[in-house]
Length: 76
Image (cartoon, rainbow, N blue to C red):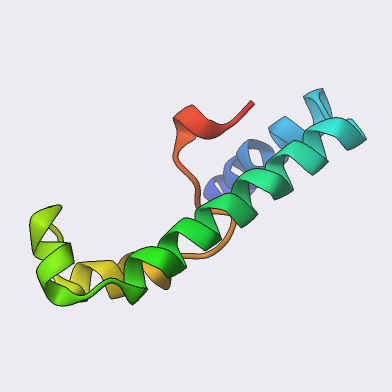
């Protein structure tokens, strides 16, 4: 019970402290940008993936990540 209450507080903390429409729009834009980049990565040929040090399986796994799963340094 404690873990679920604690997790719920962590999940809603950002919404409670900065729930402006501008922040929501910025977050959606970041998620969409990540989605476009991940899809482009998944479309690369294996030899191009090898040039950047990514296997086809890693590229596919990255492309399957959810839209809200963006790097923390991207967030506002």
